[in-house]
Image 1 (cartoon, rainbow, N blue to C red):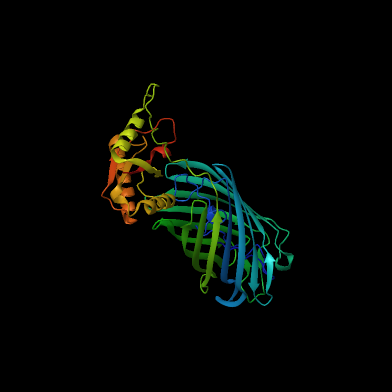
Image 2 (cartoon, rainbow, N blue to C red):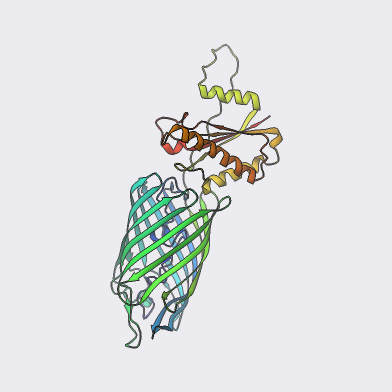
Length: 426
């Protein structure tokens, strides 16, 4: 978000100063440029090789000056921006993002300009269970229009750390870093407080709370504590994130904040889209083969294949199957799982009397067997409860829990934290 933040400079409204966030998952640098989540088993999908996003922002009073501890002049009355960003995942632990924008200013000297370009690198050097930490450097490249910049030839930067944690029912990230923007200062004379954004400590917190189906609530805040002057850009944001489908997500929200603590109270409105195509996990198991009696010897079935064959003989034809995955120690459905289950529910709703739905709960070998059995039972119950909330009758829903007794060896633990759902038609 940071749009008031670096409103660095400006007799002529420096492009770099008007730094509008591209994706409103949070105002901190972890998500602001690329919507990149650190945790592999978190609430935001990060298995994409690359992404593109676009956002529109309207900002009220992104730059003002102070006289006698009160706002005296609005140098920029409002600003509209169209932002573009992209990112590439060369490895699971590394992300490289690039972003820029076009902005329209309303002021005494209104105009439209191309903004500076930001290059972000996020290196996740630690991930354990529900926690992850990343190093985040960023470069500011002076690509902004000279007509609206006072330091167009100077390169700026940021260096910080991002800490992310997944809780049972929400996800949070904290950022702490140092921002250096040489030449980012403005003075209108001895009667006015000097604006100096050259050096600052940046702190931010962002949270995501799953709502219904594929909707989520974002509550976020940030602050720049500048080493000089009394303008410390800050903001609180509330917004909605919508997982449109596997490859598309949308966002929109409203924020309030300001530059001068004593006398500033402005707002921002934003909305946008993110496109991050990826290889959807192959969660569908192969159904047991239909055996045709002939002269050849009947193949020997595995224990699992025998179970599936008995189910088919008892309940009818297998028509749908889906795996739903959970984070370590969690029974909470993430946004992607909710979207998958909603599609399944839409297909079976109203046909329950002729269908049988089997829900098998599993857990990884982390933890003790007794706790894992209870955990797998709760996961199956969570899926059943969600299906009921979508209007699916539970008359023919059958729950089974195995704990870690049937955890697959030689695979990542995340693939054993699941509920396997199968739908049979009589």
